[in-house]
Image (tube, rainbow, N blue to C red; front, side, top):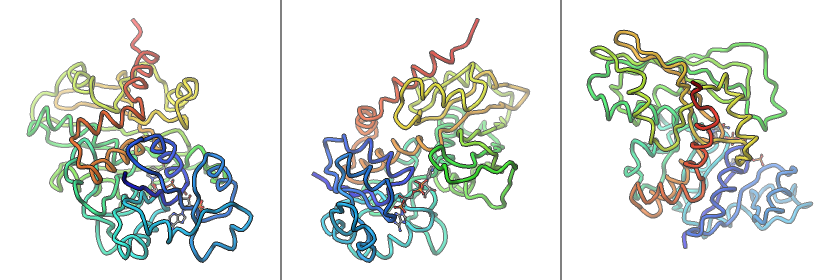
Length: 350
Ligand SMILES: NC(=O)c1ccc[n+]([C@@H]2O[C@H](COP(=O)([O-])OP(=O)(O)OC[C@H]3O[C@@H](n4cnc5c(N)ncnc54)[C@H](OP(=O)(O)O)[C@@H]3O)[C@@H](O)[C@H]2O)c1
């Protein structure tokens, strides 16, 4: 049985652990915590072993800590690192590489330059098999993951009829749980967002993708506004929707008015962490004009990368076929059921 350690127990780490602890094919060693706060007790009460950095042991003396992170890694097959941006790279250099352990890193890291954690940025829909027998792989960020689910099916269907993708990413300011983070009343832009380069790392660097990104004061998901240019006349919207009918992790919604509608439905349905774990094409906004398809889809920022981490873990540890891995991920995440519920609730009205 392969032994897994989740280093970090924040927004992403706690979600990953909540799902993979039910995977009968792996053994969970525990989680790594860095601050002695209420989340330590929460993890322990869920039956998890909590490990902390050797040099911080003293500050955790009020909690029932199992041991040091360094010792937990002595008998570990794979770490899912969920550290804050940039710390994954430091962990690779200081912990995982010296101990020869496989590791998955999250989207705040990079596959470029001196601080690259890997030369592979994973997107299960595009490059699943490339992760076989790799020791270090980066899972794309939420936006980067969501976009693969749109671009790859389009590329498979239309190939060189596609001449250009123009995308505006409308990003959330903070996550729902980040109650200490103020959501500022402003629209912000940033130069050189990592998203375009990250997407090109798995779609190919010649991909005609032009991307800009803004941040808006919401905690409720991201919205991607995408114009897809064709060499000739663009297909009808119904043909585009047909492509995504059976796509895993893509729901087609007609009557949502905004991202909060989708989140509220997830709350009503009792989805874990109020996540849908997918992207949602807003079909009522889909248009075909001359050579261009105009589309909008929302991307569940916190949930979308969680099943992807599980897919990546299976590729690295078991080199399982894509279909078998997807079936196993589905057993834990029930995405097909969630997609069906979302599509029925937001169905087209006559
Ligand atoms: N939030 C999202 O929606 C989202 C979506 C996709 C990808 N990501 C990526 O996922 C990664 C984690 O983001 P997050 O939102 O989960 O952050 P977060 O909520 O701030 O959680 C970070 C966790 O890492 C722990 N930590 C601190 N120093 C560490 C270290 N040196 N090594 C390992 N863990 C350490 C923190 O521990 P303490 O709390 O004990 O200090 C905390 O539990 C980032 O790369 C981010 O870009 C985030």
